[in-house]
Length: 110
Length: 114
Image (spheres, chains in turn orange, purple):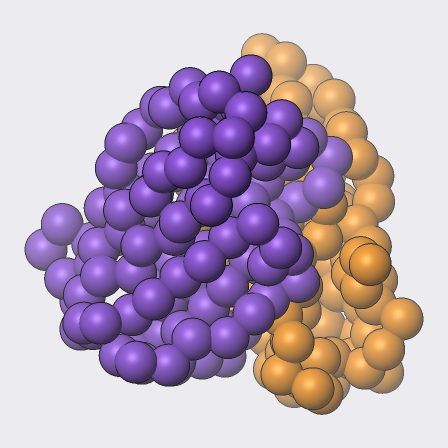
């Protein structure tokens, strides 16, 4: 079954508002990756987090890995229409099994 | 570099038919994998390969076969298509094992089984 849960499933925001998606695992993860998939497109790698409590930033995107390495979040500041898409987290467990979350679909209204 | 290429882009099959989805990469990556994407389910791993001649099952392998005779190619075979296999199929490759390194995805094959 699904090892990595992601919420919310959908998020509609007005352009300029912030957005956050959360990823939770029932087991400790070795690392976590984040991908973005534009409508009709394929997943594109954004970032990988490995260390407990790690925080990484890419322009308006902030990624966090929880202290217990069981959860992660992606926060987008001041969304733009170019941020539209589905954001997936994917985690590697301690048995080297890799699981994708179900994704959060972001819609940004101009 | 073309990256990861997949053919065909679209395919319609009748129940019971067989077919092969093609995947190729030109980045000399050892690790390749196949995922299926269904609405609300994210991506689920079907099969993967850590190098030529080596394959293993993922989360949802039933009804699919793979082989890896070369580093570049990793075809996915549907033995006897069923409506439950209607999905979007993505091939991915990475330098190291999936989940430890950046995975590059192909454009996908949209398969409908009637």
